[in-house]
Length: 206
Ligand code: ADP
Ligand code: 5GP
Image 1: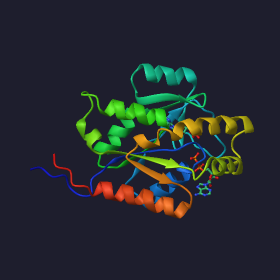
Image 2: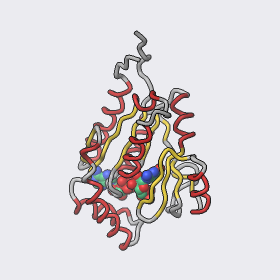
Image 3: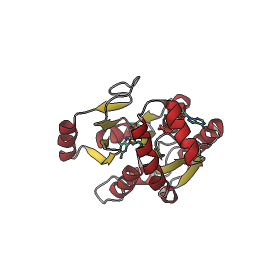
C-alpha cells in the first residue's frame, strides 16, 4: 500500500459572507504557516486602498477577464456583488504539485463550482482527495453590519447589497465540510489552524 508522506499539502477553501473576517483570518493563517500559498484570484473589481496587484488580487478589465475565461484559464469564475472573480487553475496546480498547501478564498458560488470541477474525470484525482472546505459565519447579521461599517471601505449601498447577499450565502454553510463562527477572533483562528493542521496529517491511502 502506498502511503503519502506526512505532512502533505492540501487545498483549503474558505468562504464567508463579506465582512465576516475571512481576509483577517486568512492573513493570520498565511503568517503562521510559511509553506502555505495563497491562491491570488483575478477580479474586475477596482483595487481598495492598500491592495496590491498580483498580491491581493490580479486586477483585470472586464474584457481581459472574459478573454481569459474563454481560454479556460479559470478553475471557476463567478459574478459576485456585480464584479467577476476567478480562480486561475495554473496557479493552484503549480503550487500544489510543487508541494505547497494552497489557500483558496472564494465565495459560495465559487465553492460550488470548484467542488463540481474537482469531481470531473478530467481533473487530477489528487486535487479532489486533498480538498477541504470551510465556511466562516459571523455571529449575527448585526455584527456583520457593524464590521462592514467599521471597516469603512465600502459605500452604504455596497454594504446593504453585501448584507442581503449574506443571508442567502449563509444557507450554503451546510454544504461545507467545516463551519467556524467568527465571534472571538483568536478562537476562530485556533479552529482554522486546527483544521489546516489536522488535514495535512491525515493518512491518505493511495
Ligand atoms: P472579509 O474578508 O470577510 O470581508 P475582513 O477580514 O476584511 O472581512 O473583516 C471585516 C472587518 O471585521 C475588519 O475591520 C476586521 O478587522 C473586523 N473583524 C474580523 N474579525 C473580527 C472579530 N472576530 N471580531 C470583531 N471584528 C472582526
Ligand atoms: P472582496 O471584493 O470583498 O475582496 O470579495 C468579495 C467576494 O468575492 C468574497 O466573498 C470573496 O470570497 C469572493 N472571491 C474572491 N476571489 C474569488 C474567486 O476567485 N472566485 C470566486 N467565485 N469568488 C471569489
